[in-house]
Image (spheres, rainbow over the protein chains, first blue to last red):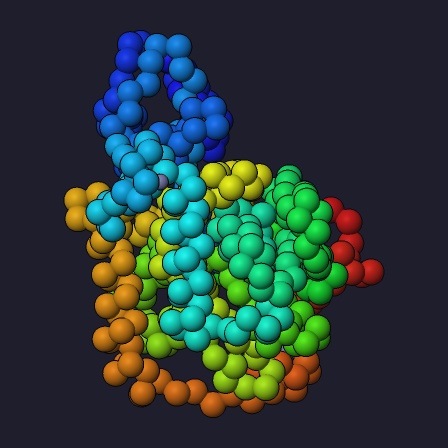
Length: 66
Length: 311
Ligand code: SF4
Ligand SMILES: [Zn+2]
Ligand SMILES: [Zn+2]
């Protein structure tokens, strides 16, 4: 599968099927800090993503003085 | 995972509430929670005109969206900070959002008010970019509200923002910052609009999910100056704790606001006067914004003034 990461934009290729939870562990991402997106869908941690999927892991954390 | 409300498949799990929702039920939850916050914390009334400070990011656009859906009278305010591509992109997002919904948006270029864009202010004054920027944003939003007759300014601060600010203030025991931290800052002078944060009980993950599910096209890129910001480290620490014990951020912030701040606030009342130049509320003779503008104009004269000899 292709995992699209943002800020800066980059791609990671992973083989096989993965549960979202394990995918995030593998990428060393804290689950509370990202949306996991497939097309127009948001995925929960128990969902399984397949070999042919394109997944966006989009950070939700903003910095600076607001 | 199933939606707790309707049994359809869930799109988001809210571990701190020990629940999960489908898209429709999450959006309903988010709207209800925001409206309840507005009521419970007496932020504003239905008829009051609200100035919503928008940045083009997920939080402020989510807030504007909820307020519009719930029938509040809103006007958006976008401050163009002059931060190259980031400002261009975020401004375009706000303008598109407003025109799609037929909402009113005001744009103020910071360069016209301060005499320089935010990156130039940093170069001219050597102040940390975010401190000059934060100061300008607070001042100009307030000024815009007063000039246009808004008694209330609403901002998109979320639970993560507020918990991170509190965490930073506690780490250094910054009494003044602690006493000021609140989701509602009342108008303590006729020159100050009330400032409210209707999303302060919703996490950053929740505001992002809401924006995504509502199809709000927000700017995902971050301001280039936010890189390495201390607040990001605080957020990371808090999210690690949250991962182990869901509800930690909420308990930390709400516990402070409910139980600690009332006792703490009493010793921290300050007297406000009017700035001798611009008339806005301040604790000193000349307000912090006017001092910033002086620094900018002084420095740019010494850099590019008529007597400067070439290199
Ligand atoms: S990150 Fe800093 S410079 Fe950028 S918008 Fe936020 S406060 Fe301003
Ligand atoms: Zn449902
Ligand atoms: Zn002033």
